[in-house]
Image 1: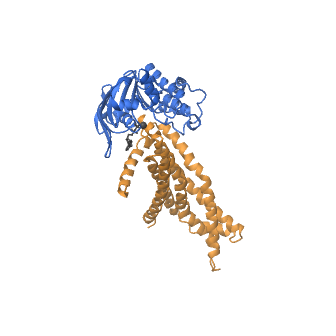
Image 2: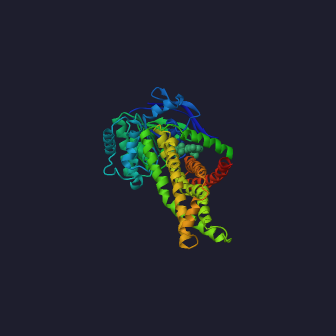
Image 3: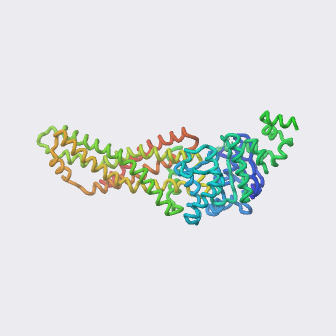
Length: 250
Length: 246
Ligand SMILES: Nc1ncnc2c1ncn2[C@@H]1O[C@H](COP(=O)(O)OP(=O)(O)O)[C@@H](O)[C@H]1O
Ligand SMILES: [Mg+2]
């Protein structure tokens, strides 16, 4: 579980996050949705501590992350896995070495155990026969999957994904969404996913935070999202003709 | 940003870089990789440039000695002194600032804009230390060898040029190489080389590490890195010469 209390963040004069409070639940895929530029990435990076928040608190279970010193944060970071928007695989390492990297840095496993763990993670995301390829040599969808494998290598309690299916074709996008959801259930992780993709919302929106211009505008789940009076949310959800038609027909 | 802000930011950056590495074994293997990338891969350019510069220095000296009373061995002497004192440390330093510096700035910069640095940070790794310290250590270790190589090849170039054009006999040249030799000059140049090695790696790393934006900004950072590390090398050269040769 991750709980935010009145989180504020600005860059200079630009106020990006205003008083965001919400609880993200474990074993669920929690979505942060909103238009491009609404502050999703900044919120996610604030939660994991890549940005320092101006004020407010972020709790990992009952540990107040914002109040911890560097060492305390580092401990919690070992329980986090993150899939960045572009994958952020290390260019200079091949697929296998990328997944192995966190193990080399932080685990006490033997070389053999590490190899087994790498094989397990890659298998879990359906990557076969690509161990020795470099990130530049594999497709965008594969990069995302390897990034997921790397993120789960150390068995994280918390998984963060920034637009995991942006730039992917619809079929691959759904595969990635479902994969993240399965892994979340399988290992009972608290997963937070940034997206602006309504398909993802429909597939895996177990808990949804909608932000608009840096404010929390709505909170709910995928079943509630079509029946709200919230204007900003309706504008977002029914931006496409497809969803407008769905609404008319129901 | 003005100069003072840069100095402050650079100092804080160095504090991050110069901390204890997470895993000793991994750190060591990274140093070996960097020695290969920064040092071994620079041997070619150092050899070519030193060979030709040695040759040109020797020919220019020979053709400028109009006075027949000046002995031929002075050509060997001048070639040695030029390579030893200035060329193999400072000029090679400037050339490496171009080659290695732009490479480092763009490597680190593109890691920044593609969030690879964020990926390290979220794992709880000090990214500045992890990525940059091995480069600095590797260059400080390997550049003195490049210096020695450059001196040797330069003198060889001078000797060959003198012999092939028939301007200076080999025996005279070799006598000149040994004439009036001051061992301290090697110490002086090695100190310079080590300082330059630090500048060539730390400054471009700094520009790469703080890139914001995309590919365009990475290119700009890489240019800035080369220009500013070259200026710093020239500045350090004057200061060190004043301190060490006074
Ligand atoms: N490091 C930064 N410095 C200054 N402004 C930033 C920074 N990161 C993001 N912003 C600004 O914050 C706002 C929200 O950005 P972001 O969170 O990336 O949006 P998105 O919802 O598309 O992920 C944008 O206006 C962006 O320009
Ligand atoms: Mg974003």
